[in-house]
Length: 134
Image (cartoon, rainbow, N blue to C red; front, top):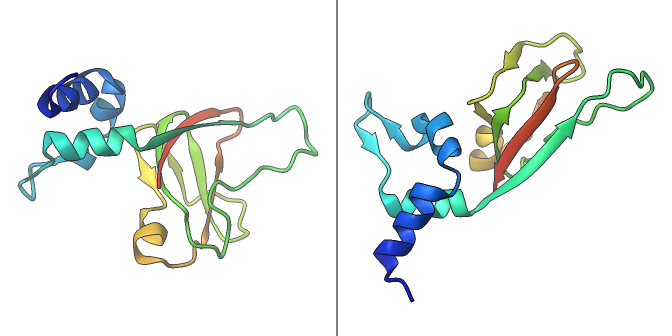
């Protein structure tokens, strides 16, 4: 059996290394002097769930599902690992911003328990790989 320090090192160094690199601001912010310790990093990474979204633009009748849902409290913080998402206000179809890989969203609704007012849907022609943290 491995000692706890070795277990933390294995999780931190080998599981989802790409995730840690892509979302480094979540774990390290020099502006505010914040640096997550190994234990926190391993707990966050071990608690992630993988999600995949496919936007099929060939099927014009397909309903494009919002990741969080309007007027509900987010059940997680979402990390966009690959692809692009359109973020639109309420029922508006014009994106306010296109989220790129390496961004996260849903944290305000999740942390402050406020109802979500934005649609997060895959950008046209994009498949998205996400991780969620509940």
